[in-house]
Length: 275
Image 1 (spheres, rainbow, N blue to C red):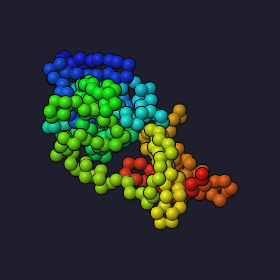
Image 2: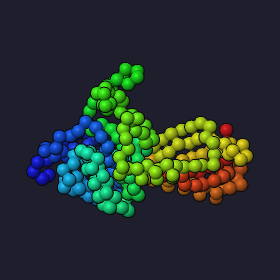
Image 3: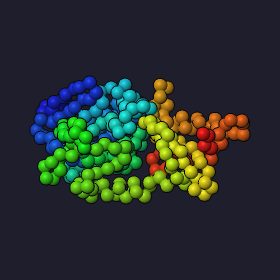
Image 4: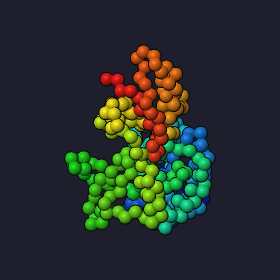
C-alpha cells in the first residue's frame, strides 16, 4: 500500500483505509459485483481508483468467498457485494460513480438486490451505515443501525429490494438511475398468488393468468447469481429447464411451457401449474 494507508483483515473482508480520512458514520455506499472469473481484474481497477481518490474500501478476501457470496443459498441481501466503497460526500459519490461506469463497462456481475443499479456496469448504491452502530429492533434485539437527523437510532434495513429511509433525499447524481429503475420495473402478465420458495437464484411463485384465470408456476432466475457446484448460475439452469420441457413437450407428466421472458433484471419461465 502507499504511505498513509492501513490494511485490516478479518475472516471475510480486507479493509483499506486512508489514515488522513475520518470515516463518516453513514451515507451513500457503493457496491461492485463481479463474476468470479473477472474478480481479480475488477478488484485491481476498483482498488487503484480508491487509492488515487483516498476513499476507504473493503473487498472479499478470496475467490472462494466471492463464489460463496453468489451461491444458490447465500443470503440474498448480501449477494453480489464483492467490493464496498465509502464516499465521504455526495460530490465524491458522483465522481466515483462516473469513474466506475467507465472502468467497469462490459464487466458482468449479479444485481445487488438491496441497491439501486447506477448504470449498465455492475455498480450499485444504497444508503446505510459506514461504521458499526448497534441498537434495538422493534422486538428489542440488537441490529445494525443508522442515525436519524434527531440523533436517535433506527435499524439499517437491508431488504432484498432498494429502500431508503424516509428522511434521506436521493442525490441528483442518482435521479436518472432511479427513473430507469422505475421505467424498467418488471410488468409480468401474471398475478402472483404466493411465493413457494426463495433462493439467491430467484423465487418460485404460484401465479394466475388474469386473461384466462389459469394457474401457472412462475420461476425467476437472476443472471450471475445462484452459482452451483459446477459454476452455473440460475439463468443457465432456467435455460436448461426450458430446453428440457420444450424437448419433452406433449409427453405424459411433463408440464407445458407457457411463457419465457425477461423482466427488469431477471428472467421468468411460466409453466403449467401442477399441484
